[in-house]
Image 1 (cartoon, rainbow, N blue to C red):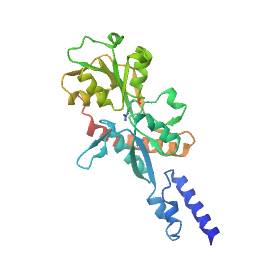
Image 2: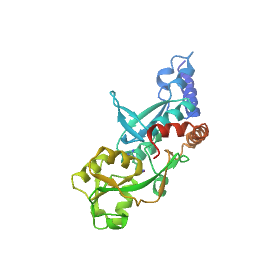
Image 3: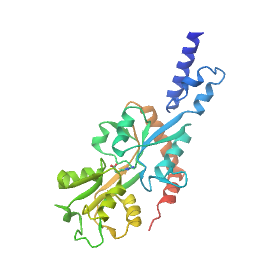
Image 4: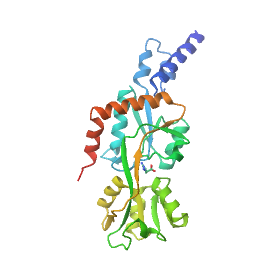
Length: 263
Ligand code: ARG
């Protein structure tokens, strides 16, 4: 009997890996032998994110739910691959470690594909493009990226904005914040001279804050993609297949247009 139970548990674990979601239910379903399908229904796709990044992921509404473009695309992917989405809100710096350690299945956080990150995770096909922009006070003497040298630049820690600022203007000129909005608040309080951040959150933050503007000159285009553990190629394939379908049937476009109005 004991042996049978072990075999059953293994069978369920195997099913779990076949559908490529986290198997959070093998333990509890092992003894309800008539119900092997239940494990499939309750499999979760754990998404690590940093929900301080509107319109991609942020807290909203009475129940403070995590909403946004990434949250909705992830839910659509989860549905396609037969999993329930579970979102984990952590520091941006921790998103990739959460994926490499296997605690999360995917990292989705308006995350830019970079060569350095590709050393530790695989990226799905891209689902969005972005650029890093510069936010300054309306009356700033900074008119373009070229005027930034020697200025104090606020960034969200560990982001590509942080990387660019550190590489181009030196560590001593960079102030790092846990949230992009905190960097923007520091800017409006005169604690930093400029903020480098992705264009879409920049628009939201500038909208919400008096007296700031976005410079016309911006950094090169970046691609957003979903981070997945390097050894989990099965999930990578499923996510890419789901993304392709969601692009083809217009789901991605309709999610994006719910959150971003093209001017
Ligand atoms: N695109 C930038 C990067 O990958 C910023 C992403 C920040 N995302 C977030 N959810 N806070 O570094």
